[in-house]
Structure formats: structure tokens, C-alpha cells
Image (cartoon, rainbow, N blue to C red; front, side, top):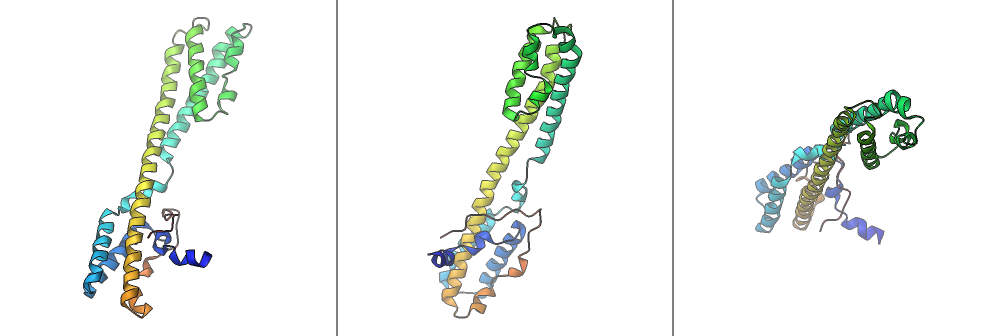
Length: 231
């Protein structure tokens, strides 16, 4: 069955080409079909191709990238929070509570431990540390500790929320990319199949397709849709 499957693979769905050039290819095919004045059997294929081109958004090219900006913001907020925890431990907790049983509670949340945690665990365990700050700020002779700690922790949660939102937007955009790429690929494949039925010579078919637009990938080019089959 491998050869049979390869025969039905949709070449256009996995074409190594940027989204800008893929739309340009489709537009060129659409224009060539209109200028060729082909029989009416091509009309529905031309309509499908035109609709796919209208729905194809080349501005979604960045959706394949990482959430770089919001990730950097989270890393900065994480660094600030860990520094605050470390400074508080060294300047207040250790000097004043070292000989008391509660010191063991604080040691659970020292910087070396929190720094090893993943995002979700860091946020949760830091909330436990905030509760300790609230309970023992008087013993630490640091009345503003709860408010100061909450302010730094809030920056961490806000950065985390921003990154979560950015990831959700990117996930939605990836779905859009996959959908409109496959729609255009399907339309091009059907046009090619109809041309093969109409023309006996392969050269007559391929003159409608400007494959000179195909380029090797650069890092800025989004990966093509991995799914290959479109009927």
C-alpha cells in the first residue's frame, strides 16, 4: 500500500514554501485559469480556488513562533521574585527566626528550592510563602513585608497570565494556519486534477503553476502543514 498512499498524498499541503509565496502561487494559478478561457467544467474549481485565496491570511506567519516577549517578561518577574525571597531570607528570616521552629517552614520556600520549580508549582508554593510572610511579619520586624511581597508576586502572576493568553492566541492562529493552508492546497490539487483530465501533455498542465516561487526554508518561514491528505 505505500505506493498507493503516496499517489494520493497532497503535494500542495506539504509544499516547502512561505505563506506569502504560497498565496502568490495560488493567485497566479487563478489568474492563468481565467485567462485560458477553459471549459465550464473548470468554473466550480475556479470558484473554490478564489474563495480559498480570499480566506488565506499571510499575516498569520508569526503564529508559529514562540511567545518570546511574554516569556522574557515572565523570566524577569521570576528573577525579581526569587531575589526578593532570597533577600528576605538573608536579611530578616534567618537573623530573627533561625532558632525558632517556624524557621523550618520558611526554609521549605528558600530561593534554591523555588528556582527548581516549574511555572505552576512556583506560583502555588509562593502563595504559601506569602501566607508565612503575612503571619510572621511582626516577628521579622518588617511591617510592610506582606504588601511588598504581594507587589512582587503580582508581577509574576501578571506575567504568567500574559504568557498564557499569548499561547492561547498562538494556538488559535496555528489552527487558522492549518485550516486555510489545507483549504488552498485542496483547491490547487483539484484544479491540477481537472487540468490533467483536460490536457494530455504534462507540460500543458504545469504551465499553470509557477513553481519558481518555491524556496528553501529560512528560520523566519513557518513550517508547512504536516497533515498531507486532502480529498
